Length: 385
Image: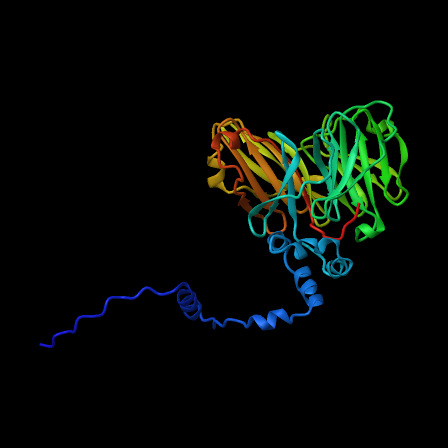
């Protein structure tokens, strides 16, 4: 019988050796680059590479050094960013307890980021609309509007709209062209029936007036944000149920009486490309579920196209749940709240994918009572208000 020799005690590997082993096991060769190579790396290529990185990576790169943090003020870097179109959607959120500091949620990385504080007023403001990387903030209790880019901290205070009766308001925002270089328009619709449009090209309010008598009295759904397709805004109204639209180019208001599905509450209008969608809570006995409908253009009726996963619906059984939409750019951020729970969910209308959003608050009690206000936007490092 062969006697085995005693093996030598294992030696502890260095961190570099462990990293090298992991790369070898994964089939990737590992090689340490010479520092002298990076010292000779052209400065203009740095800007070109960074401009093509995802926006969430830029958050981390700003912390590397002061030079990279100052890239936002570089004209050459802005030119590089303008050549690359950002197609990802993020959500800018504010809580009811902090009306000035915001957080940004990136669905692609499923991470939260603290936003750079914008020079907003000390009073409480809420994000109500967005377009082209710019976010429109409304000062609560006032009629002041602020347009900000949360990445560059550039901010603009709009002149107040000359409105006769101050009442509840719904806000919509759209670009005049493909980017903010062509300017943008903001539509204010007061629940008294008065409305006005701000055009950034002439820095003034245009077409102030009242809606046609056929659209009055006006009762808009405040849970649903305004959506825009090809320079036409769409609002959800009730009593009677339907859609209210406004063609910005022609200045024409239209009203469509579209009955909502039965036993549906907390209705929200959304868009997916050129399609108009409807989301809401379908309640039957003690069961609750989020359902999705699509508007059929020929019949002007809603057709159900999707539902939330059944396992998630069981979480709401027997609970009094409310639904609100916090962002609407094809990718929706939905808030589901009750006394026992507080969920954030993203829904992609294109892929019909439901994803739970991780909470950025560790305390269960604070998370349960948290109320968020948000809007979806496409991050841009070159958009100027």
